[in-house]
Image (cartoon, rainbow, N blue to C red; front, top):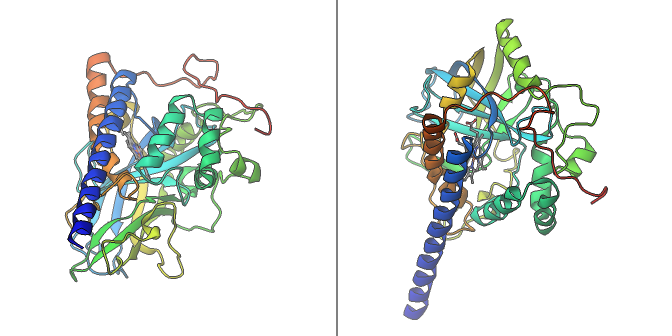
Length: 370
Ligand code: HEM
């Protein structure tokens, strides 16, 4: 019995060491990419907006110190796309919210992507995903997607093509975070941002072909929209006085009684059944101003911006669902590196509308079907 306990303790330490090493090397690569590429490792193509966020007057979730009913924040929201510098590609779309009108500091940042489940769900799959991404994406994704049908599903589920407007899509955190209410009970929480009046149809939702071939991300051959069409449309909307209205919602779940065993549902590859864990309104978000390119570049969103009552669960191994959080927290150094790169090498220029420009990247093609 004692030998068993010692063995388990050694295995636990070994797993944590591997997690620390993986985090170190991933972070190093991401820092190098951000510093020398002068880019966000992901979601480089985006636009920063400003507005207000108001916690709902009568929340139905347990009382919480940070989410005080009726409390209002001036907020920043960045809509972006991962990856590629082309709004008309088949890509994951995002909404990141900062509960403050500032470039960096904030009491709370929430980063969300389109789709219900992602392309990777722990540090192990993220590393595999990174490897194939660095080879050039497109056809290089195929072996990874074949090895992980869940990733192929997540890719198809998350991409959007040619949406008309960012306020007609749904964005989710996917990962689970902590929520400690005034009742002292620890719960898990997931967030999502939905259009204020949502009929269940998302603009840009993939058709069957795109859903099943999400690695073929190029714009249509006869595409007439330019590379910046969506950001231009957003700027025009804001200049015309349009307001984007969203609801920020949360989904809560109690942890399992025995903390030693991590349930499958902690993985961001597993959505929580909404009939048992319904999304509840957290805040109303109204966006009415587009900020300029430089402000967008100088702003970062970081999940370590959160109050103690909304903690980030800690990971124990590279297969632990929370290991994604581990990597994401460490990637603060990539954010710093990106901002240093502007000081050292200058702010990168906005990219042009044309696909003939040098920086336009085509997705490596494939036989059809692959
Ligand atoms: C479910 C998992 C994830 C989600 C939902 C997510 C979401 C996002 C979003 C929405 C952005 C764009 C922020 C902006 O507009 O500025 C972003 C950027 C970024 N993410 Fe993630 N991410 C995930 C996983 C990861 C992981 C595993 C890493 C590990 C290295 C990572 C590192 C980064 C970095 C370095 C940036 C760019 C930050 C900057 O330079 O400002 N993300 N992510």
